[in-house]
Image 1 (tube, rainbow, N blue to C red):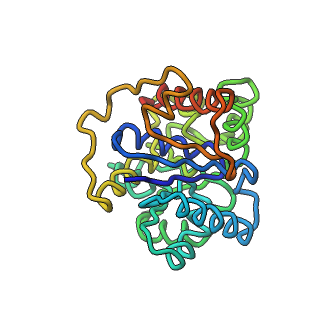
Image 2: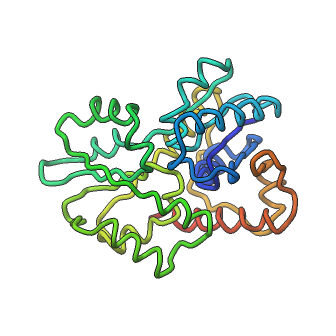
Length: 274
């Protein structure tokens, strides 16, 4: 099977990275719309147009299914895209349900971090109405992390200062978990624990999305999905993991840009256990 995955930028690499673990034998087309990143501050109309263009592009590349690896794009455009196109289109949404299900008492809460657009959209509101019956979920906008991730700035003093500012007034002891409602947020998992405490659990929707994809396409999953990936040379991610990468429609073939992707995938391999 040939699977298309797209995001506003390189946050969706965290979804692709999970696919490498769970569905390592498939072929992938990854589209990063870095020309328009971040989506979280764009208008709904702009985001819908970007997504429409990308899906059309991926269909031209003969993909069998598409994963919207962007919570913001999901919130704005998923319904529109599914109505317009016939192939399976899977979409990310903040993993609020599993986070709420982990709560065992009344003393803890769940913190959902997302972009401003995701938080404002009706899709998240409806999700909370369905799964947050006891009103245990708090929302926090984190727009700055997208830019930090795109710049590969993960552990700098600037990032730490930003997180401390955004988490000001939040006691990590009050929360059982944080939900990363943007695929760019996965790169920073060690810092969340540093600021909020080691006992906080980081939850994303990547694993569930890829396993749902496997069910939809009737694909066998890797029984050893925790095995470390071999990420060595830039061309490895093209050849060994059978992936074609695009940057806003421009195929990435040079080692300089592939090396950035390799570094980001290596970071994701490191933070996967946090």
